[in-house]
Image 1 (cartoon, rainbow, N blue to C red):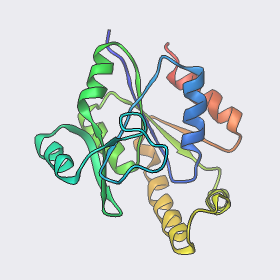
Image 2: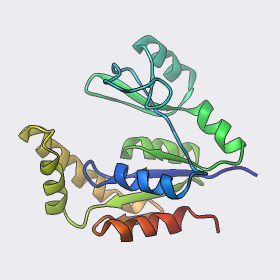
Image 3: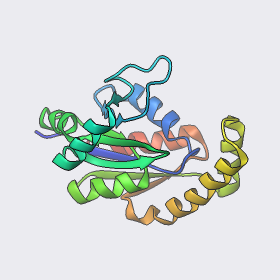
Length: 183
């Protein structure tokens, strides 16, 4: 038996991380994919748990070797998903969740066309803007950039198997739970 690859995507501020944390608490059998990055670890981050922290030259070798399921460069750092741990979990029959951006989800779809692809939507752009602003972690320019990117991402929602609107958290979580539960 092989596991199922589950891709969770949506704009920044939509609540993917919060939904995913709750979903994993309900489904301990799911394996959360660990991404690799070239950025330095933040305080409290553990290599292999939060990220695999690679030097830039190693990441570039991984790209050249085709050892990444998906990858992108943001703000001068690489981010990506190593294929080997994902394939190992799938081969063990475990389902694995990737929480990734749109570009990465598109790369994954080209390699794993049978992946379950779920797009998390805000109820509307105003609500998304409020959520991003309430985090208090972004400059005005960064907020506007994220909102512009969100419009591009939301326009791509039809590329995904399912769309879940995160308006009421419990309803959105119940829908995710239904989608990832074995049939």
